[in-house]
Each structure stands twice: as C-alpha cells, then as structure tokens.
Length: 179
Image (cartoon, rainbow, N blue to C red):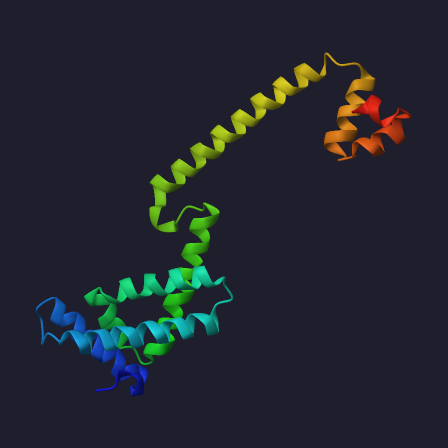
C-alpha cells in the first residue's frame, strides 16, 4: 500500500487502524507501514497548514505537531476517519488549534477554564491596576518636588518623546547643557 496515493478518507481510515492497533484493538501494522502512514499524514497536514493558515513557519510546524498528537487519540482519529470530509475536518482542527495557540501566546485565558481562569485573570488585572495606581501616586509625589521648568523638561523628553537636540532647540539651551 502506497499512502501517498490514497485520498484523505482512506488515509484517515489507515490512521484509525494504526491507532487502534496501538491500543490493542485491531491489527498491529508493521513498522515500515506505520512510518509510511504517519509520514504521509504529517506531509499532508503540513501542506494544509501552509494553504489555510497565514502564520510563521515555526507556528505552522507547532500546529502540525499538535494535530498529529491529537490524531494519536482514538476518539479524535475516529471522528476524523468518519467525517464526511476528513480534509475539511482537519482544516477546522488546524484553525481551532491556531486560535488557541494565538490566544495562549497573547496570554488570554481559555473559556474552558471558566471560573478559576476568570477569577485568576480578574485578580491579576486587579493587582496590576492597584500596582499601576500606586506607581502613579509615587511618580506624582516625586514630580511635585520639581520646579515647573524641570517638569517641562521631563514632559518634553518622556511624554512627547523629544530628542535631546530637539529639547535644546525648544528650551534655548546648548546640547551639552541639556545632556
């Protein structure tokens, strides 16, 4: 059997048989046949990921590995093999996992975490807000000790983003006096 010549449905069935054999629920395929099937599955999922996801190469590789790991689960491989279109089902899996990966990398809390995740996220936000307010209060109290001219220099440099040269021109100082 040449896995490269199979359409998606028969290939998904072969993967299902291979996974069932691993769980002792069917015929155990020989090493060469198993390797050929998984190599072809990896190749095809990589091609799909490249076609449907506009992501950096490393992210696509991560997603392919995530999908391969999911296909090792008997329930998942059964759903793919019995889907009306295994290819479309895998595209949906890729997109779902891409969204999860993007959310994870942005630090979002998954909806699956429900109460615990939401509470943790809200407590972190509350802590950050309290910390930001504390820092803001400290900065205002220190700035209060500066003269209006000194506060003007700080505002121009850090709020407006002026360079030292631009500040020297604005405040009519030499560059060395500003620096």
